[in-house]
Amino acid sequence: DVKVTQSSRYLVKRTGEKVFLECVQDMDHENMFWYRQDPGLGLRLIYFSYDVKMKEKGDIPEGYSVSREKKERFSLILESASTNQTSMYLCASTGPDNYNEQFFGPGTRLTVL
Amino acid sequence: TQLLEQSPQFLSIQEGENLTVYCNSSSVFSSLQWYRQEPGEGPVLLVTVVTGGEVKKLKRLTFQFGDARKDSSLHITAAQPGDTGLYLCAGDSGNTPLVFGKGTRLSVIA
View (cartoon, rainbow over the protein chains, first blue to last red):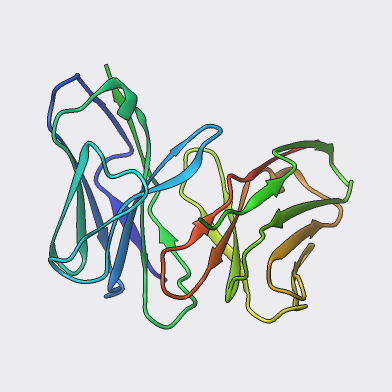
């Protein structure tokens, strides 16, 4: 089974801090995604990557950046955390041959105070 | 912009009842997926439907893809408390990331 792990389940940070959210998948998937999930707004795509060192903006990239130095790892960076970035962050990966079916990590619930 | 509308947004039913949730769009998708998300966890894939008119069954869950591949439904027979969760549909157009609906939050009361 594909396993997608995220570095923290819960995280509390202060406004202005730099925040790193790490995601690792163990199935050699090419594609990785970062979403945030908020009540009433659903899943919103922040960034995605189809290969190492490649990144594409999703629907809401402002205030975020990403890094993909290795195929299995995709990091989401909040350069200067703000309270409106309090959310559930979900990482997902998908391989090339399965209708873009996504395997999600357990999520990181980030609170910015 | 492709959109997937899910209805209802919220559903609370008694154990043993049947229910149907819907996923509609004006866009055509090459495939459509259904996920279930339990509180505090990430979504888990339930099924992918690919062919217009396709029906797939997963125990008490029946998934149907519309003939025109623009909509889908999920029917649960004899709901159980373990079915409680957020049900998400997602459409794949082939060349872009998945488009997700906002979900139907189901609560099954024992």
